[in-house]
Amino acid sequence: MVFRDLPVVQRVERIAELGFAVEIWSWHDKDLDALAATGATITSMTGYLRGDLVDPATADEVVRTARESIEAARTLGVTRLNLHTAELVDGRAARPRHRATGPMWLTALRTLERIGDLGAAAGVQFCVENLNTVVDHPGVPLARAKDTLALVEAVGHPNVAMMLDLYHAQIGEGNLVELVRRCGPAIGEIQVADVPGRCEPGTGEIHYPAIARALRDIGFTGTIGLEAWNSAPSEQALEAFRAAFSG
Image (cartoon, rainbow, N blue to C red; front, side, top):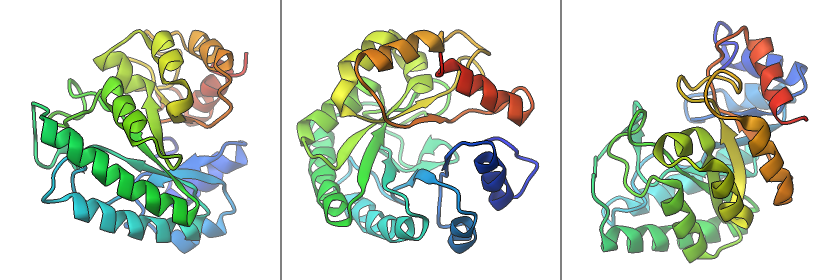
C-alpha cells in the first residue's frame, strides 16, 4: 500500500531498506521466489484463497486453500496467515450475508478448529481479521472485532488468534483502548490505519499514541502492521507510523 509506483518486488525491497518488515495480501499472483530472494522479513500473508468460514458448502475450500497457503508460506518464511470470515471479491463479500445465524457460528468454529490443527502441524498461526461492513466490506458476516474475538476464544486453539485491525474496529465499534485490553491474549497481530481515509497514523481521528500505551500496558510485544494508504510520500508515511508507536 506504499511505494505504489514500484513493482511489488521493488516495493518489498524499499520497505526493507527502511528497516521495516513486510506484509503481503494475496500470494497466488506473485513471484514467491523473487520475493524470497529480496531477503526481506515477511511477517504475514493471506491464508486462504476461496470459501467462507461460515458456510458448510464452502468451508472445505477454505481448509483446502489454507493448506496451499501454508506451502506458499514456507517459500517466504511466513509464520502468520490471515483469514476472513467470508471470501472477499474486490473488498465485498462474494456471497453477502447481512444476518448471522447460529449455524454460521458453529460452522466457523468447526472450520477454525480444523485450520488450527493445520497450523499446529506446520508451525504457523492463523489469524482471523475483523472487518468493517459500513465502508469497505459490506455483506461479511461475523465481521466485528467482538465476533472474531468470540470465535477465537471459543476455538481455544494456540494456532488460531485475532488479527485485530483497529481501522476497521474504529469504524464499526470504537472504544479502541478498551477493545485492546479486552482482546489481550487473543491478539496475534495488530493492524492500523487512521479514520477516515485509511491513511497513516496522524491523518485522522485515532490517537495512536494512546493505543501504543494500551498495548504496552497489556504486555503486547508482537507485530503491528501498517495496512494504510500513504497520504504523504511513502517514506514520510512510514516514519509517521514508526513515531506513533515509538514514544
